[in-house]
Image (cartoon, rainbow, N blue to C red):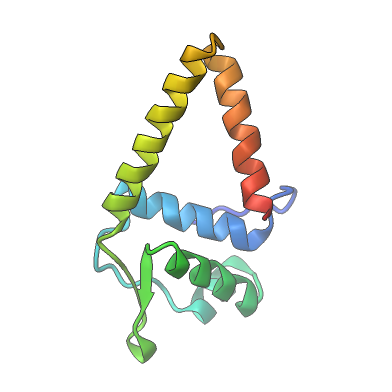
Length: 121
């Protein structure tokens, strides 16, 4: 299920991309699961087809899904590998924040700002 926030500063394609990615990484979209068609998902969400197509392209570039022509778009096994890489990066970041003497709240604030900036690129 994808919930769009029309008042968010995050573009709709990124909301779609990030929510699908999260579902893959959490395992609620299992490896091999066929995603809805771009046109079908766009219709369900009330978005332009190009908006959803961009989200799917971004997921493909991230190695989370693969489009197999007319067969559709499928969740790839690499989601677990990506989650492990992200976890390792987060652990390195946490160690650095601790070494700098910053508290958890400050570390989270800095990470959130960096993630928001990266999503705008």
